[in-house]
Length: 254
Ligand SMILES: NC(=O)c1ccc[n+]([C@@H]2O[C@H](COP(=O)([O-])OP(=O)(O)OC[C@H]3O[C@@H](n4cnc5c(N)ncnc54)[C@H](OP(=O)(O)O)[C@@H]3O)[C@@H](O)[C@H]2O)c1
Image (cartoon, rainbow, N blue to C red; front, side):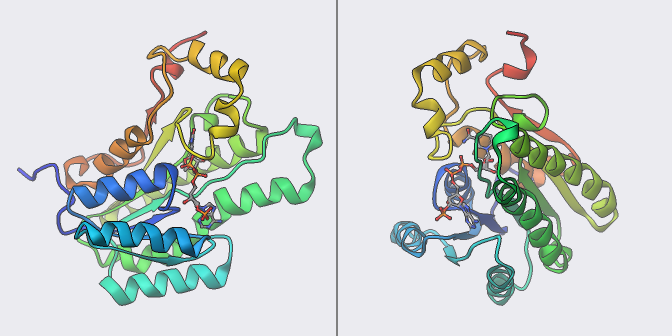
């Protein structure tokens, strides 16, 4: 029996400097993986890497904007140079602009699609040759409960997250014969910089808590734990699935 570990795995986590992506990188490192992170702010990348290296953890990374083709190419080239393969890809980067549907400018909804969906497509395709060189690769897409129900986060965001779930199912089937598993994690409200503007509003917070049977907001370690499980060989027979990390929200009706 294998154990609950990521020992020997090399993982790329997009958006690993803050929020859920940071928690995933931290969890992976503590479970024995080597981790490569990217984010747009070079100083944040440097600060995270220095902190992990100071603790003797094998973390690497660079500044990259996942919406820029040249940055994506540089990121994959750096990963290939370091490891020559990739065991785990975590497509974590996501953003949102929250508005009533009719108020979106075209540039706004296109930017949501560029960041949350088209960059995921492009990065996953670029990683494919590296994932094929792994002995047990796993892709983990960070989607959202907004993929499945309306949570007042705006239609374009939910549309991108729903498409990411369908990508998860389609690739799971297509890549299963190659030994590459593809799964998703769908958080509900989680205490991160992205969710902060919503959680700061007492009325919204009260409504969210009322809809959450566990009666609290998720801490970022909680979706990170689900991502770690899906990255491990312990979940070797699980592909095409979506683990919802929502404190019971989707199970309820209020
Ligand atoms: N928090 C929630 O309540 C919640 C709920 C459901 C789903 N999710 C999903 O979980 C994922 C992570 O969300 P989060 O709340 O942790 O977000 P966050 O707090 O805003 O953190 C996002 C991370 O991604 C990086 N990033 C953002 N845009 C980037 C880009 N274009 N290129 C490269 N890096 C970029 C950020 O660093 P830089 O700013 O330096 O680039 C940061 O490290 C997203 O896909 C989100 O949709 C979150």
